[in-house]
Amino acid sequence: MREYFLDESGELGFSQNSCRHFLIAIIEAHDSKRLKNVLRKEKKKLHDLGWPREIEIKGTSLFGSHRNSLIPTAISANRHGHIEQIISRILSTGIVPSFIAVKKDRLTQNLKNAPYGIAYNYFTAKLFCQIIAGCTGDDLRLIVDQRNKETHAHMPFNGYLETRVIGDCSHSAAFQIRHEDSSLWLGLQAVDFISWGLFRYFEHNDDTFAKLIYPVCNVTDHFYTKGPA
Image 1 (tube, rainbow, N blue to C red):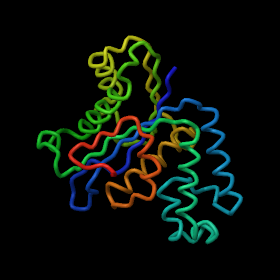
Image 2 (cartoon, rainbow, N blue to C red):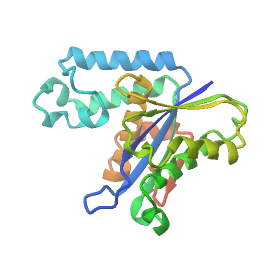
Image 3 (tube, rainbow, N blue to C red):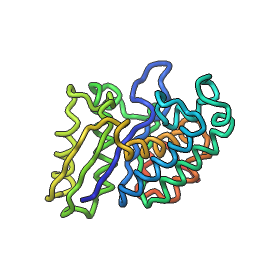
């Protein structure tokens, strides 16, 4: 079975305070056991340095650790180095990242005006169908963070994605979508770092982490925007 983990960075709102970009990242985990072991070891290093157990270790929380008095200076003073180490170790397990980056102000008006959730479903399916092209006979499992507000029940995510995978990709084997708690799934924690690292480039023009990830990406879909050089 091919196993994939999905995460997004940014949001698809259009208020004055909204971000300029939206990004969906998906990783394929070829060696889930190794990926879990790597994340456990990297998290243990931070906990041993005093990272509070009640604060989830994510790209955003580690990058902003210098603003949190609960996190030791020994960590925050080298936060960039810690993030680079975690991303490098994740990539060393053989995961294959793919992503789609969207510049929101260039979206077509029909997508901007669509009910909440439609644009997210559309871009997720667009990316996932590119990833699984040629895998029509393989069993697939996609794991999504259950706290993701974009996949709520009012705009059915599962049914839309299943329809696209079967109809557009001619997929004939088993396809499972699971919504899980990211605090319990290390694969979701791994894709969070990948998604966040890529988003730093598109939203903030910071390629510190994207330059580690981009060269090993499978699908790089820059929808109305430009990717790293």
